[in-house]
Amino acid sequence: YYNKEVLEVTNNDKVIGRVIILKNITEFQQLDDAKTNFIATISHELKTPISSIKMSLKLLEDDRIGAVNPEQRQLLENIDEDARRLLQITGELLDMAQVETGKLQLNFGKTHPGNIVDYAVKALKTTAEQKQVTINVQCDQSLPDVQADLDKTTWVLINLLSNAIKYSHEKSVVDLVVKIYKADEIEFSVQDHGRGIDQRYLSRIFDRYFKVPGATTEQTGTGLGLAIAKDFIEAQAGKIGVESEIGEGSRFYFTLKRFGK
Ligand code: ADP
Image (cartoon, rainbow, N blue to C red):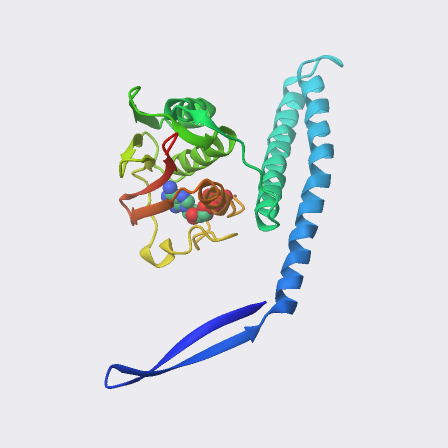
């Protein structure tokens, strides 16, 4: 494996030569592969016990083992929320490792954009209500079908909406708009009116593990969400991007191919 860098030699703004630097990064690449395989194994191994913790919790919470008092219930709910987070993190790590090792499998099918929108909005109903954020949906029934992996695309939209809500102020509005883009593509767009993202960090927002510096209480994420979203969309030959203005809000968008195009 080589890393290639090209430097231009100029004289009075005219390019008079180029220097090409090739760096042997085989060892680095091997280490990186080992790390990815390690992450895949660990996250896979963790999923089963965490799932069974959740199942046992459910039995306790439903009073199936015996009556649970309010104090105990609160503790069970806390454990349940932590277990949910753990599952989410291990799931994201596994997805990331699958993408990196080329093991990502897509299930393409014909689906209406409205299905993806419905699933995602339903999944975030409670989260939005808790923050009194209104999700305004604009997705016409007359839009054409898309060629997409329904699960993965819904996952992406849920992630964008969840970020939009997370970084919005209370009682604000998130606009989810689906429209035709360049004739044979469909664009999904999630616009929030929250804190926005500093231009300095915009180009790194889709990088693995990247989180905008200046940690705040709600920044408990792994910094993997957008990186995986990018992988999922690009694997479907779509594009993903962001426009943002600090203090004004952000617009994340992605495209998918029209069915049959
Ligand atoms: P995380 O799991 O940390 O949320 P993401 O990959 O989803 O990771 O997001 C990366 C970072 O991008 C976040 O930590 C946050 O700083 C920033 N970010 C993402 N979406 C938004 C948004 N809608 N508004 C402001 N900042 C955002």
